[in-house]
Amino acid sequence: MKVKLIPQSLPVLILFLILSQSLQAQSRTRTRSSSNSTAAPVVQKPTVQSTAAATAPSNNSPAQSQEYLSPLEREVLDELNLARTQPTQYAAFVDEWRKYYTGKKFARPGRQSITTWDGLAALDECVNFLRSATPLPALQSAKGLHLAALDHARDLGTSGITGHRGSDGSMPEARVERFGRWMNSIGETIVYDVDTARAMVINLLIDDGVPGRGHRMNIFNPGYTVAGIAVGSQSSFGAKCVIDFVGGFAEGEAGDHQSGTSRTRQRTP
Image 1 (cartoon, rainbow, N blue to C red):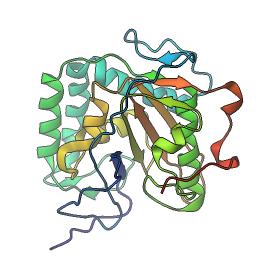
Image 2 (spheres, rainbow, N blue to C red; image 1 turned 180 degrees about the vertical axis):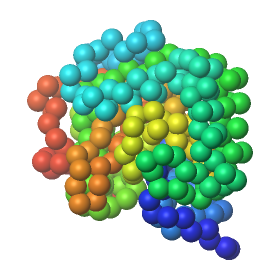
Image 3 (tube, helix red, strand yellow; image 1 turned 135 degrees about the vertical axis):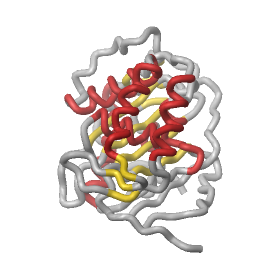
């Protein structure tokens, strides 16, 4: 199989995982030297009955306090929700990137030019998808879910690992369960080259080179109602953005809201 190599400075190198109980990744027909992408069937889980408050969207604007989010993290949540609630309007933002393409070459001001997999075909497909998409409710934010994403963002930045398995062997569902209970389904997206919030979301929506456009499907999965967004601080391996999506979330006890990296937890095999 001929492998296509692209620069390691790809503006947004993204990894996608929708977990299955077996956690076996489906194989891809083409690979990149600087990125590994995995996709598997969605984990379905019975709704958890809990005395803790379950987070779920009630309108187009998240109601919970978001003091725990950084300005960039809030912007990413706002961009995700703008795309979900007003996809036709968001299509215009994506279409503005048309001017940056020359064939399969993509050159955005202030960023290194790259060679894409799909060229304008992926952008056109994304624009058409957004123009015909049914608006969805806004994703809510939850502190415990944010902390789970932050654990992994910090781990990626300090350890140099890639992918959804942490340096302690944990997978996304185990990290989320450190801080609360997830409901119905769970998925995770990782952005490896942090950019502006809009640029990161547009890149996830275009999803160049990703079979099935899994990152786009994460954003427009009607089963996801809550998102935990975390951008790790700059380190020797750069800042990473981790987004955990769930079908619902019940916060754990207040005492559980501490960094999972400083706690001993049972590892996922």
